Image (tube, rainbow, N blue to C red; front, side, top):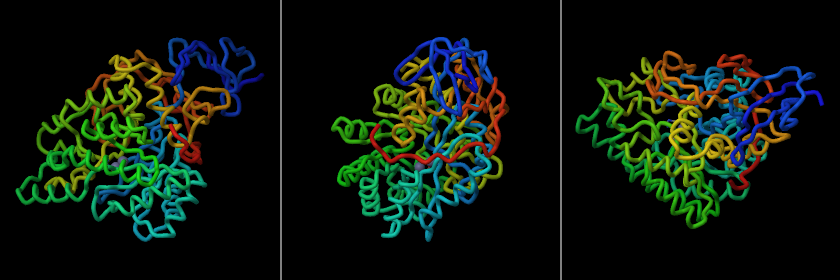
Length: 463
Ligand code: URP
Ligand code: ZN
Ligand code: ZN
């Protein structure tokens, strides 16, 4: 057999196995996996000696080119996917927002236009629902059939995104009927709003009050409510950006009862804490995102949640705003700081460092968390999320021992600071393939904007 590319001498790591093997690629797919493949006739040979060969990372929570908080997230689908590729992510699922008065289809088409011609990696969409009449309910089924098989709902941001319980219940029931998965932003937005207004009335305006006005109990209450609503609707539910032990306990209880409740956390909740607000002046604005940073002790609880499968996924919630001019919109009032932080580039390095080098879980569990479980939950598996004959050749050649210090000076995201500035990580993507084409080679971007494809996802069928 003639291969377009042969990867030789690597160590393949999947969610279940680790073994030495060559990989043959043809037509953008993995065509052969064998201990030794002949490379004479291959179009290209990549030597992966000393490297781990893993399925490309799948980041199921990004906000590229998203209008929010009076501005627009600073990475678009070109700069954002290039940064993702540098970090070993080959597929992302972004959020198409239904603005008030719009159909769900308009939301989807609007975001397709943002990505087309720009993305260097494959991409898919969840749809954020902000209004749900009878016609929208019908559209949910149509969208699932067209590959947009998950929907994000908000229990926070009153007046902007927040939905009431009845609407959430309707959406969940419809998702259950059509094979959709509801992704929930679980925070009690009504209570938070009262606490925020009290803080402002007391003259508390600095960035840290964003965190101090969003208690862990507000996240735990909403997480429990989301799970209860899903149970009544007979629907699975996926809690996004889970940040604290209180909410984790609610997911654990639900899973112990056998409910299809899932949750992700993000590197910022694993590596940063409320102590990050102890910086001069307005710099705390760099850490204003939602849910907020918590006390440090929550970090280890989240790591243990990842190790024990209470949490199934690590995503980034990448939502970058430059410190200058964007975060500064809230200079005199923390409620005006655009919520979000940049993270699309360093997810694999951070999770490998804290998880595998930190001896909290194996390299196989790492692959499960950053690629395989996201693929299974969000209808991408087995095309993506594993190394198997017939799967897309989305592959990361990962040097588990390369060290780097994260810095805005060297990152590729279009944002003027790093949340993880100065953190030393061990583990880096060296070469990255998307559908068999190299997009990163020895750390350099060699892909092409527009080469990334929209991926139609299947409906939810379990983890
Ligand atoms: O602060 C955040 N997380 N911004 C992005 C929107 C969201 O709620 O995920
Ligand atoms: Zn959210
Ligand atoms: Zn988000």
